[in-house]
Image 1 (tube, rainbow, N blue to C red):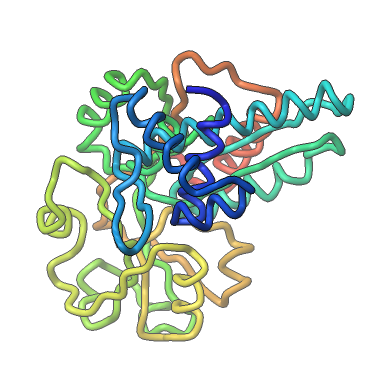
Image 2: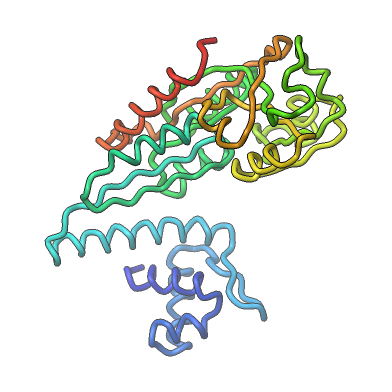
Amino acid sequence: MNILHLKYAVEVARAGSINRAADALYMGQPNLSRAIKELEGTLGITIFDRSSRGMVPTPEGERFLVYAEKILREIDEIESIYREGAAPRQRFSISVPRASYISEAFAAFSKSIDNAPAEIFYMETNSMQAIDNILRADYRLGIIRYATEYDQYFHTMLTEKGLAFETVSEFAYQPVMHRDHPLAKKEPLCSADFSPYVEIAHADPYVPSLPVSELKKNLLSPDIERRIFVFERAGQFDLLSENRETFMWCSPVPQITLDRYGLVQRVCPDNTRLHRDVLIRKNSYPLTALDRRFLSALYDARDRYLPQV
């Protein structure tokens, strides 16, 4: 296996076919096909499934391509530094839950990035994808969210995977709705009051050891008969802003965000289930100056926006 083999495999995956990849690489299709077979033979895996539709990475191939792309990026960076005398590129990457206090922290952090070359990655996703991003996709940091009754499960799993972890915040979800929602000014307010309305909920499961049906039973109220499932925060805020029948259970939302969309967040004293946001990284990973700047902004946002539980 050599660097050219890595480049060939990455280009085949990008192009989706040997013919298109060979054209992009300015080489003959038989030579490229032979190189891919040699690479698969060396590794002892099948990188691509061949069919009339083209070349599709197998699950093992997808894992290999993650490493191949990482190696090629690092080679490009080394060449750039030593050939052109360029400054080393700053890198920051994090996967986070869909939380407004975290996005506010990231926005504040972004103002601290200096003029040196930098690549910054910020992904909002679920807990398992955040863990996988660190293990397989070269993300440096992650924040995962789970209900505190799953503490032992996550602690055991993170330890087994060689990940360090520390609690960032702990809170109870509270309902967010438009300021003209029928319940916006109701006193007192309880969870059962929301049964006639449309709940917005994030669609991806939180605990992989439980089936989706069990998760829904544990994490979603059986009293709600109408739900809209979303995967990102922009959609949820648009729905809450435009549809007065909708509501959503959220971690504490900064007032600036509520005002931006014409929303209010209320307190339901009967909702006592706690959730936890936990910072994760590889045990062997040392925090960089960029990481520390983000964490400073994160803890500042937590202290400003989240009540102490």
